Length: 330
Image (cartoon, rainbow, N blue to C red):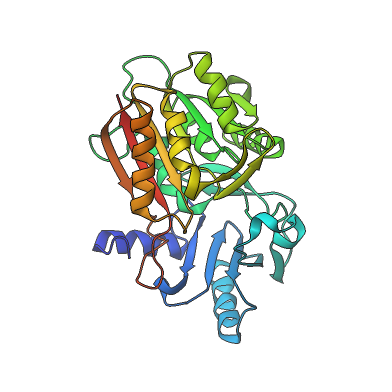
C-alpha cells in the first residue's frame, strides 16, 4: 500500500467502513492490491459501482452482495472495464444495474463536506474521479504539505485556470478556498454540470468563468491577452480529439501541454500536472513535464509528487498509474 503507517491504516478503515461523516465516496476494493485481481468496487453515496473486464464470478457476486448489505446500498451497478473507451458509444460505456433499484438520472455525493452531482447514465465516468480526492483537498485547504501552500498571495483572490475541467470539481474546491476560477473544457454538457456543482456548494457560477473550447487554442488566446494565473491545472484524458488541435495523446503530447501552460503561470505561481495514462511511465511523465517547462523558459523552484489516495493502494500486481506533480515556477 502507498502508506502502511498505523494512522494511515486507521484512516483507511474509517473511510472504507462508512464512518467518515464528511465523505461518502471511496474505493472499497482496488484490484490485486486488495487481494481481488481484476475487481474494482466503489462506494458512491447510496450506490455501489463494480468494475471488471469480465462478467462477475459467483465469489465476486457474493462479495458485492455482502458489501451492499453492509452499506445499505440502494443499488449496485456494473461496468465492464474497456481500454478502448474512446471508441465506445455512451450507451455501451455506461454502467448497468445488477442489484437493487435504479438511481435517478442524477444523484448527489459528498466529499470533504462538498456536494457533487453524479450519474451512471452519462458514459464511462460518473462525474467525479475518486483518485483525485487528496488533490481536491489540497486545493480546498490551500495546503499541499506542511510549509507548501497552493496560494501564497498576500492580498486579493487567487486566479485559477482549470483545463480539461470535466465537471469542474477542482474548480469548486479552488472557489471554496477563495479563488476566482476559469474552467475550460471541450464539452458544454460537462461545463453545465460544473455550474450545477458550483450551485450545490452555494457558489455563484456567474462569479466565475466557464469556457467551451479546445485547451491548446484557448491557452494561446489567454497568453496573447497577457493573462496570468496563480494556479494552472492540467488533468487531461489519455486521449482526446478536437477539430482545432487534432488528436491529443498524453504519452506523446504532455510535454507540449506543460510548456503551453507554463506561459500562463505567474512568477511564483503553481502548475498542477496530472496524468492517469498507464502507458506513460512515471519517469517519462516527470521528464516530459520538466522538458516542457524548461522549453518555456521557466524553472521549478518547489515540487511535490503526490501518491495515489489510500483507498487506491499499490502492489507489485497493482502498480501505481496516477501521476501528480505540484510545482511552483519562477
